Image (cartoon, rainbow, N blue to C red; front, top):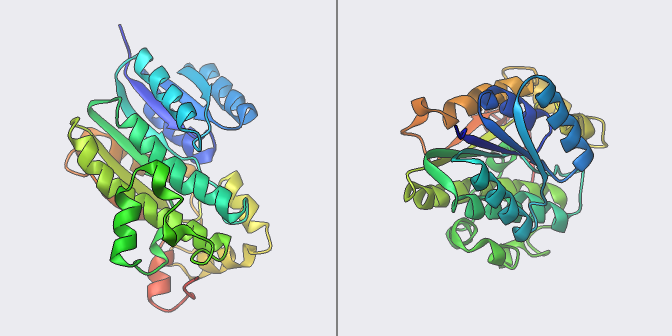
Length: 277
């Protein structure tokens, strides 16, 4: 009997936690740009009796994402698609960050929107950074939400004069993720499917460790100290929320973004932290 297919793009801490929570008894298609990370994560899941298919993917390449979507559809009904791929501000220059975090996310929505099954659900793991900035001009927000992915990086609001550094690029990309989710909810809805976003705060993953140990690590420590929760969170807390949004109990939720940050954005709104920009 053909099993339902769950696609998880990004084999890091959050991706693995979601794959393990959602994937038992299903076919898990696990994908990542880093083949070493991918092979290790897939092997660990197989050793725990999961059914795993692995495939390298570059989310900045439409052909690569399309090939992943085609593989997913060959294995059975594509019921869940989770995109956790992304770069942080300290990991790449502006252009590469926009290519992965903004363009790549849009391409995943477009290509998997063609194969998602009726009753299926999609989810992008974005970031609380999308909540840190003020709303962009209405025309810019409309374009970020709705222009075809292949036209995104040419938009005036994404050119060098508007994006002075990687932090701004990151915040704009993550706000755009939510804007795309709202727009894609309409398209996915035509197939009887839903799509949502989660915006995590500081989650204990290798990516977070990279930032905490960087020259801007003190900023992250200040966020933790000022937040009501006063802690970071493990990937499993994101996986629990993802399970709800991907499952039947969230059948009336689409085009939404769930902020899970321990109250960091609340602390910013209360003046306990400076607003970056």
